[in-house]
Image (cartoon, rainbow, N blue to C red; front, side, top):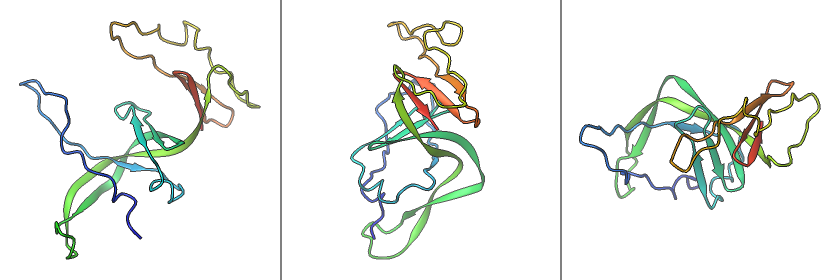
Length: 168
């Protein structure tokens, strides 16, 4: 069986120009999806990774949405690359080492305009309440609004951001 990652390509460069005093550093992260259907990745037409630099990144694979959590690895994970360009011999070489990973768990997104009240859930703060949310972002490029967080009775979180809420 072919690897589900065989169709993906590695991005060796990016289009953001660096200033003269900046250095580029490449950091590799392991993205772990947990117990997910192994047929999900090969059949996904699209993949979106949003907010990787934030404490709560989100990953969308096709119609499935996952919320991530940054953690440090216990030890160091090694990533190997196929050393033979033609693929006729079985030799591998160390490509990178990883010391951080992102653990993803599936979430369900529902529109914020029609939130579903769950029994035993504390009420989520209103997105229009000035005491619980930031002021609306202006068109001049100010920082984006932070998600509103509420905790349910079972200690899982309800994140409200944009026009959707994520329930885990």
